[in-house]
Length: 148
Image (cartoon, rainbow, N blue to C red):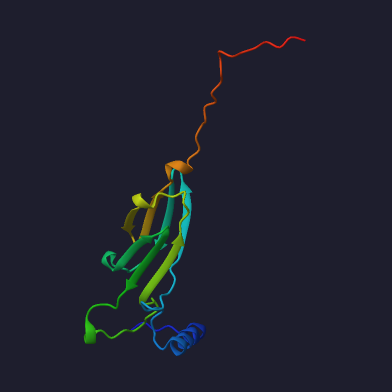
């Protein structure tokens, strides 16, 4: 059996249980947050979410009017009544995050991948937002010479 004593962690866990009424960090009505990184890589905007221990089928991605919503649920270990938990430090329950995407991103072509507990979204930069050169048209036939 593994034993570990951390009085501050136990105090935090106790306070969380008393305030929320349960040992889980979130429910579908009150989800917990998830850590993320976001950066631009060339013509893509990349967002990475840490979701270790979450099954890919427990992740939901929705986009509505430039608002990206990510919901994930970390479920208890299978085994039911036969499992006797010795140490439980990884939070279970629902995790959620919303991102407000600008008009410069192409939300129609978002690519999502999940590997090693990291959900990676690649959002292309919209063509209208990319820098471009503007040609200047001139009139060649109406040149006049000014004499002083």
